[in-house]
Image (cartoon, rainbow, N blue to C red; front, side, top):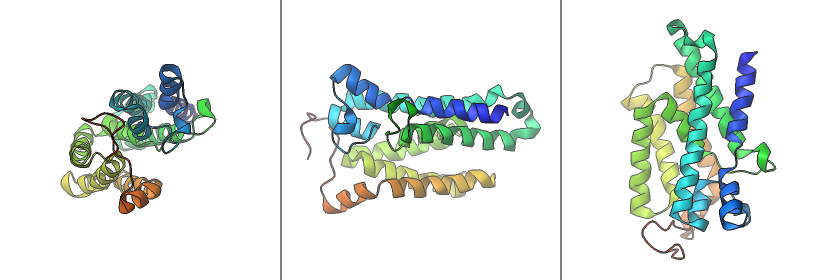
Length: 213
């Protein structure tokens, strides 16, 4: 029963609509009415600039971390003999937060794509793998200034790291890593189309935010 309660709490944590609250509270507008219409870090970067985008990304990432940490409130999973069950619960809690981010109860169920929250999940469970993915993300972002492309390539790197570099033995985590890559690619179909057409917006890392080239 405690697992159900924790999953619900994780969903509520994920439902915190960071981008919506920042855009409304600080800029007096709803981020979902501009750019791609998504209430996530990528659209915030694109519409409101790097400072707001970075803040939203960090907070959304922390939602995933906090959701995973809820697993330690269940005494059964603290036993070293139940390590596999602990990891499985952590993944479940993290995914509940991702679902909350995508369908936030606090924002009429219209949120973002959950990439930052998903990263927070990985960071909480396997920090080294997460840092490697961050390295890939930042490298692609620095070279291209496309957040969407950076997210896609970093997500593809995730299962490669899990399966071949770190050789993660837990089968559920291996399946999860592959599913993450597939999910990110599927949720970025429109971005991929725009990238192929050369019309995807870039984020203003070092230039004025009005610069889209």
